[in-house]
Image 1 (cartoon, helix red, strand yellow):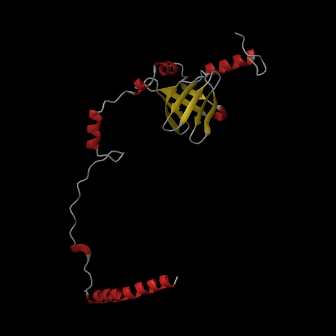
Image 2: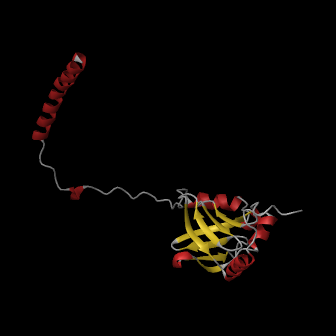
Image 3: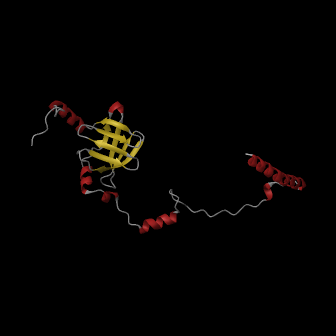
Length: 192
């Protein structure tokens, strides 16, 4: 502790003459003139950059030399078949909300889904349950379309964006389920 105190005092003593010299040189200087006599530096040549910070010229060269695979070719045949079964249009949900599902004409199999202010660009994904599942990997969102209802979930936030959404076909299916009763939980497994 004593060494620390001594070193602080030594630094202060050594710095004092420097401060005195600075004060004397400032006193001998004439007052500064207005900044009007200073010359402007020549303007730097600006390079237009893309949104990712890469110069536009470089980005254009890379795009022209890189073959780009269309989005629809990234989907398997099974996923394209699922896309044919997706319910599209404006779908009414619970609590007066609604979602809009529109197919992307430029990229078959892809859909623009909007729920309120949120927008998603989704594509079909195979599921073992037979449900129609659309996903947006960037926004971490998913839409499930079952026989009797649809829902949109935000996986990043862990919440449902829209629930109990039904098209006219889904309403008919839900009514048919209610009439027939469907298999119950305590009913035996189906006989083969």
